[in-house]
Length: 103
Image (cartoon, rainbow, N blue to C red; front, top):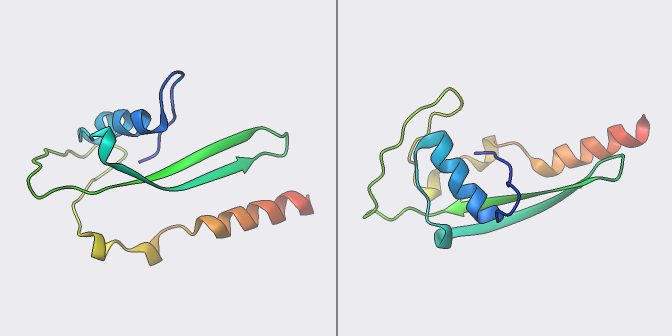
């Protein structure tokens, strides 16, 4: 899920809030595992930081998740995450840099 950090809010707090707003799933901040941090610098010099978190769910946690206009959440084992079908962020960054320099 993608969301922005509000003023005075940590990235972890934002991840929990966005999850609840978009899917109804209430995450526990202490169980978030930050797996990547990306820093994007725009042509005008402004910088944007993006963090990606992994949240491992215990079999003992009971959640009711719901679909929204934006998401259709589903539970899958970590071993079945289709990483090869996900957007390659490094390729996007490389293309972004190439397009910026060639303009």
